[in-house]
Image (cartoon, rainbow, N blue to C red; front, top):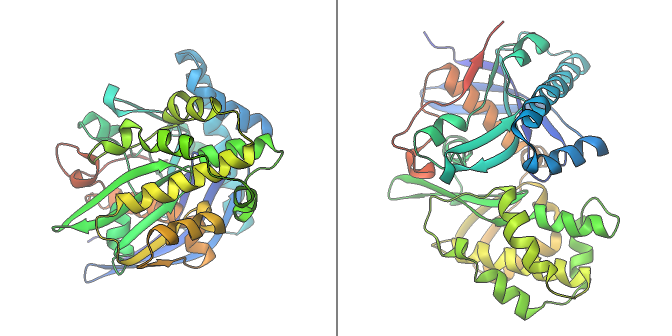
Length: 355
């Protein structure tokens, strides 16, 4: 008999480098219907040393990456252990962890999430379910996005589920298939320019709002090949570093204007990505706090109802859903959809490390 109740910690580190998101979640399944309660949640910020390391790692050699993986696994295990101790969490069924993406090149059969080494189970003294992307890439998939099955199971009442993190992604039902794909970079670019002004991020989009839109830059960004591709499709930091930033850097305009123009670009691409411009759009991720970005999305989608949920769901939805992916793996049930990633078939992905 499979259990009906699960006591889980979900762990996520996104490309925007805000830190490690942890959520303690109780899941219940009854008559094939899942419900959840988010209990304690916290984001543990990275030190400057780790932010620089994670930003630089895309250029590391194989040996440097192996060493980084070991160090990061130790760091992540300590963060998880401290979270468990701080909130006196007992009788966990598993810790379900995404790790941190360093390389994502599915076209080359390559994706690397560090922090998923088997030692993490011993270090945390917990069963750990992790490394969810590798199997999908081996099966010919994009390895991303993985959140959509969670959207289908936990947030089916919304027409669209969108996350605004390092990148924007969307998921929705079409002809009884879950469709999902990355739309464009978001905070990977906005934070890059906010950093140049001495800020960690552009709070509520206040800086972007003061800038002017460069039509020439906007047109060049909108003309990028990625936006013409059909789904399934996904983005990695390499796209930002090798394609997007070099384009923006060619324009001798103020940083405020770069921020404003890129915000307009993000909003426009989101509007273009949705097949139906009406309905309900659940919006989560750090970008949902960017008032200027939300206003521009609403401008381009005047008939869409944009729904921003409670802070716990807004900030920790990805940790919540990776917790669910881990539970599905423990149950040996499908947690990755072929319709989303382009893999050969639906499958149950991830590694289980037990004590």
